[in-house]
Image (cartoon, rainbow, N blue to C red; front, side, top):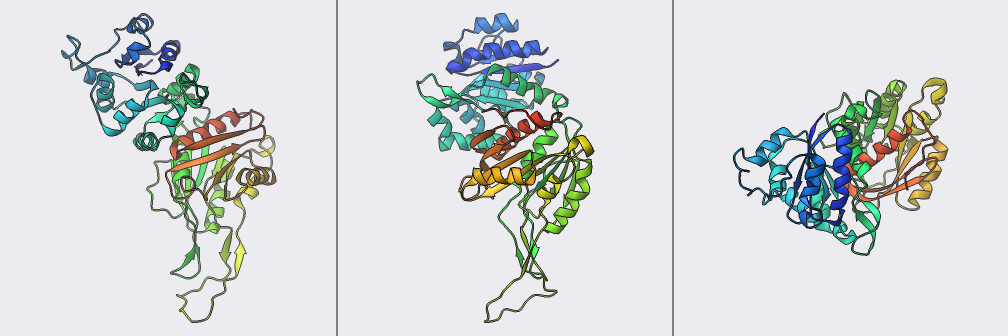
Length: 408
């Protein structure tokens, strides 16, 4: 299958890396283990050598290591660099280009995809410096396996424990074989960005949506092997590589594009911030400024998500799985629950756009994913990570279209 470099750093979760190594082998992969000096204080290298049947790399200064410039040779040979557990220290090294040991040098030298499973104290994970480093790595394409919540080695209860080995192995497998994703070969339609409702040729009604969340969802769906159509409103961001890109400006154009494409989609993700109202009669020329107050008469725009929800069921006519977004500023989750039920949506993603660190025109988000059988709350994290979590929930629905409980 593939050669994977398993980086193990100095945390109590290092013992779980043994099961990660074994799990990767059960999938048919070869594993070369790279341990930091601190990691060797938790688990002996001989344990990994016995399991991997390969010498464990613990130092770039070991005699004979420089014959082939070992970190470069390994960097060229591997199909994936997986670091589990990954401490705040190593995350900082990766983010800032520090190469003072074999593992950090390997990260800079390899062009293989990188998967990181962070593990640390809850306060460390939430610290601004660590969050900034995680965002930097996310922007570079590094993927993450979210840490779990529970009892930590320090005695605290909170988020920061290393994800379970089976979840880490599954994430690695998805990166190596995206065709194994349940979205592989399926058509996913994603909307992103705002709509602009023209008042005259110069002025318009709009909102602060940047399109980042929708773009992240489109990129993640395509990485999982889906055929992705992206319908994008006006945004200054560069759209990700997709199979089909449709540019629109107004809510009416968004409605026409989505309704024309939805019939051949398996999944529709409505992440766009579509205007609820549009001027009744936009002026043909620029309206002159006067001393009098200006009154605009507005009409409701079509509710695209509700219209999709009224389509016949999947069993009858192949209605796509529907995912909506509820951007609210108060009673966020309660309003999202009501919208999900009223609009006939499979998943509703609720986010509080009044927060400075989530919602519109920022790189992070904090959402609650609401389904028919449960809810999943995601703390503040990069929108790329939020997109991956949403796609995980969508994958649970593919093939069943309902009834799969959301993990707590």
